[in-house]
Image (cartoon, rainbow, N blue to C red; front, top):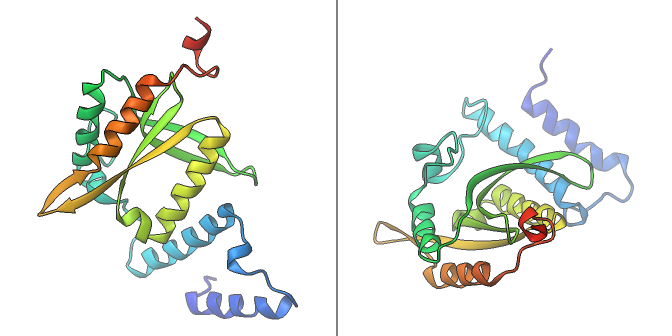
Length: 191
């Protein structure tokens, strides 16, 4: 027998009565925040008749399977800058990381530079305003840092109907990647 959403909410409201000193939301780990937000997101999607969320931005329209040979408009702008510096990256690299609770998280890195172990994420402004995505991005950055992968975020915004990126920051990041030494975690370091 399926329990309705209303019954779930009523059951959750009784949880405060079980603990004399309930945990505050700000005391939860990033991992628990993600699980809570994903649960709330799935309820929202179920209400709209969807089984699962569709993804975000023009990546869903132009590149739903996250093919490494297809770039969104913002990614293409960054790729052009990266190519002008002569840098070689892996686009849409899929990796799996485990959090403190030993739960796996599948991550897709926008631009990964293996020799310097640097990840460049192309991040539209809604990544800050949509809480689930903002917390996911924080967790991903934390998990990648544990694997000695540095993460840089390039802001994407829209002006006069055109997709724009923070070109000055993109150039600084590319210059930093160019000057970075090979990481001991990379095979080229040892060759």
